[in-house]
Length: 184
Image (tube, rainbow, N blue to C red):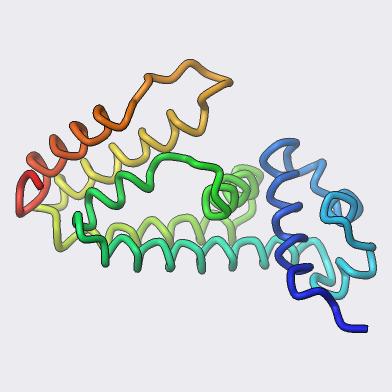
């Protein structure tokens, strides 16, 4: 009997969900199998150990980030505007993966920390040609970090409300301050 093609992704989704909602201690192989709706044997078919499961989650985050970067580069509005718009945490698979891998990194997982650094460098490399200089690049990155952080915490920590018009105004301000082309 062949495995459902979605089983591996379901396991990674479940593992990420547990990491984000309950922390690393709760993210056991048994809990992951239960939340994914697969048997322990089904989980082990895809990931032979918790280390392999963590590596799979990290790999998926990096692949999703690469796809995101390619979309940002192709955006008709320009990479900076696209990057800032995608800095709003929407609960996407990429968002969930980033937060889950961050949980692993916070608990000392060196591979997770290194993967997060690699993704940040890739985002910087995609945006560098647009930025006036390195300081301007860091302005773009830090505003993006702030958007993501504040939006990801909504509900648990009061965050400033940023509607679509306010986001567009912020994008124009950052572009005028930090990019070679100025406001869009």
